[in-house]
Image (cartoon, rainbow, N blue to C red; front, side, top):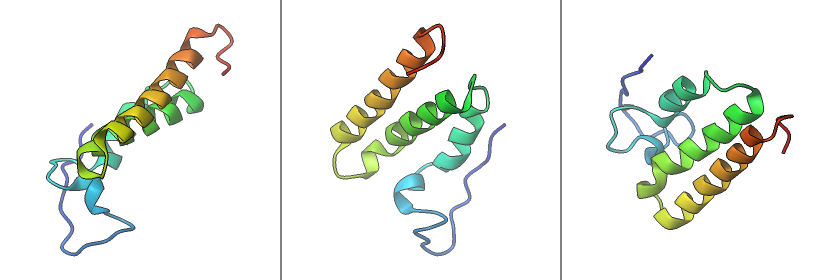
Length: 89
């Protein structure tokens, strides 16, 4: 399922923050919602959600390396969760 991004007619920091959609065909929320629907549980989906968010917007903020390190933190936590037989962190 894809959701074509429609740029808002006015700036809206709550519903359409510029750093989430600037120069993109799809708004990050739509991409993430589509991706996490297949997660095995809510915690895994939440960790995937966060990693995708930081990766998606890393070029539109002050420090791409900082956002990518944060994404890696969430990915490492997700990997730990998925590698444990009981699914605990």
